[in-house]
Image (cartoon, rainbow, N blue to C red):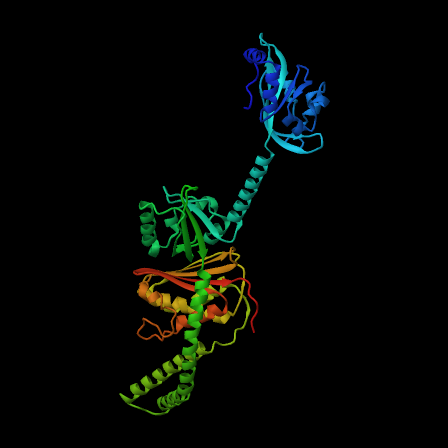
Length: 500
């Protein structure tokens, strides 16, 4: 409040000082001052009031305050009561906040001030005093700050980068932006109910927790960024490889996180390495297959001819059968080598994944029945069809089913789940078995050509599956526990350009 009002004591002091002294004070004061009588007619204005309103004192004498002091509310169309009327009626001091003064020349100024009653010795109101000052510059600065804040909030909430703040006391997410929610697949309410460590993959959790707690205990320097990367799990259970920049600042109560999801870049990098590796192996495999195919055909044909046309006694008969079976197995291996080296032409068409999965299980069921292995389907209804090669995709799922059957000793279960992921327009198929599991050291090499843990395996089955899924612009990943339960996830895009 600029002025608390005039009372009788003030009047005595003014009389003691004299009119000239009072005029000097009011003229020199750093605020605009206007004095009126009880009717609201102007009796005095100092130079600052003249400059602010555009009126000279001699022009305003006898004019009503509302004519000289023309104010409107800051909100457009805001009708306001004449503050002088309120002061006279209620005998109170009225603050002037959120008002715009329209000067005589039309210039608008934001003002701050007050109107107070002037009282005589008996407490009667004998006039009004208005004191105000121009705060337009402050308002402009506030406007710039508000605009900058809105721009910052817009960039924070709707930018491409992932941002969030971690509360240091609880470790929970606060203020995650839209990009962060999209990558992790959570709603804002869901994510703010989780700790950051809750989404970190188990393999990285201890490392991340230790690093985070160590920085808190040491009260790491504020505004100093710390960078690291780790694997996290989305709401759908998908693993994402992210790079994190942590900054502890003095203006927020917590740790600022900037997250970059480079899962796709990592996949591309691995794909390039894998492609180069497969290209070299493919050339070698194609050459070997070509050189071996004809001799093997001769061996197989001769062995079959002898078995069909000669009456042989043991052990010659058993030896010939062994030769024939071995040559057939070698031929099968050569066919796999050729498929691996030169993927065959794709016959593109619409594929119903649910129907394909069911059909492939019926083909694998004969191998599962002797071991009392049950098959459970959880297929989401209404999944969109994908563009793909039905035979090639069928080969993938049949191979996955047979691998699961071989991983289960007896009385196990194979669960197949399908669902549509609208966020990235993908169909997800999960094949889950409760077999022996895959050791961690093997998982990184599981799709490498010729890598196998089977006594009679070629190590090409999953490599071929990987190649087929890549041709469909999809992905195949394996997550397994050391002792039991392996999950193979196959993701395929719903829409894809036809390839010739």
